[in-house]
Image 1 (cartoon, helix red, strand yellow):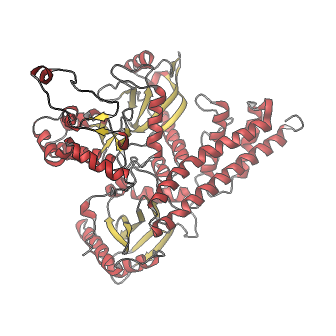
Image 2: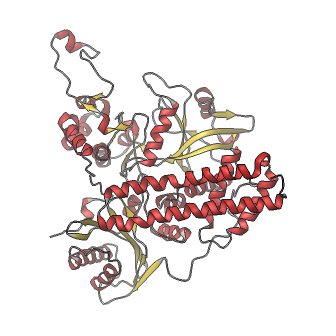
Image 3: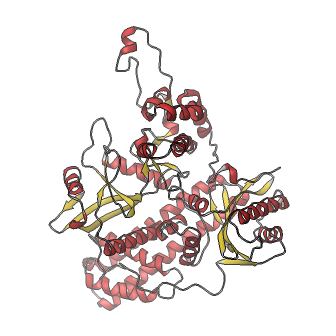
Length: 576
């Protein structure tokens, strides 16, 4: 910087960050663009590879431009006057971009790498956006609009024809008939007119895993509701597997426990705005995250928290549920997330480290979550008014997280936390829910364990307190410190006792290896009693048999990619 004025350096730095953002976006789009070809060629291993590669693009590009900026600014790297000028120039550079909200977040990511800012600093960060909310485009590139037709069948036939791939449908007319029938039944069930005024469909296809999804909405008189078609591709061709027509079904598809979609979109804010009409209870943050913009999703989540704090007087409190050995967990009753902070020390018998716990969270972030593992957003250097914390919570934070949390006279600084959507711990849910809901949750708990096994994940700790129930009644898993690869487990039968002393012993009388796992013991860890235990055994007794686990493990080790569908069997169309 020795030979440049502040103005010159600000221009150079701002252009370097803009260039890095453009490179990130180009790489993101290249990977996303492959999704259609992966689907057409049924390259499912390529799908997995692309998902992992795209997750790394952002951090790599931020890291690289930070190094460039350090070299440019030299001793002035933490000169806030320079950065304030750089921010002003950058704001001008991105003013006409269709994705300027993403560009602002990218700039923030760079500054926080340099300054490790405690709380926020509006001088050098886009704490709130510099721009008005972008208006909707008038070029209709986001959606295709299908006006009233002679019948639902004719309307759907036109839509499927417009969304053809470089491979034929297995039986398009059969699928059109199945979709039309499902829509007509939905119209009748909600008391709407049988005549559809119009259907609006997002132009781009949503890809995730082995599926391709057409997403839109149906308008009939005063009614409108989602229209989501799930397409799969088998050797015989592409077919429509399911029709989703409710807000809840859309919400489960876009769940915070699922991996991200790949969709080509020029104006992400418009897509998020559209999706929010289908799922009004979902935060914008979740919708940005669901389409792969997790960094901006974090920005949106933080901004919504700040707005909430400004408009309420609620306090942070210890979250409901049994206290864990690894995390302190707290929440604000009126804001549906939890904050999880790693404890300084772990109680016996936990035998892990802080680094290992963080590695487990990274594993979940990078791996297919199958709709069963909650997506956690990682935050650093959060700063809150001390008055917003209950005395009980402050005492627990001071006792168990002093290395991570600083409690000052006027504020609390949290150096590191994971933020997740709040769910009801399963052990509490089955105590408080009606019998039918409790039984459904217990059955789905077994489904969670099986779904995780299918993606090569063994949960380790199967206590009910480690499972949670979402507002859709779906069970998820959220305690990651005992997760491991299913392929690494050695599933064994417990040897029979050879004597009375062995039979009554409280300790194993046989050698146990580090990775040895005994499915017969799972029934004791789950801890269900009475009718709920009987219900679980009726549906999932195979989980206590070593043969089940060895069979799933063999399929995983052979590279088989097992299907986990994000909807109920009842929503699937007949292929007869």
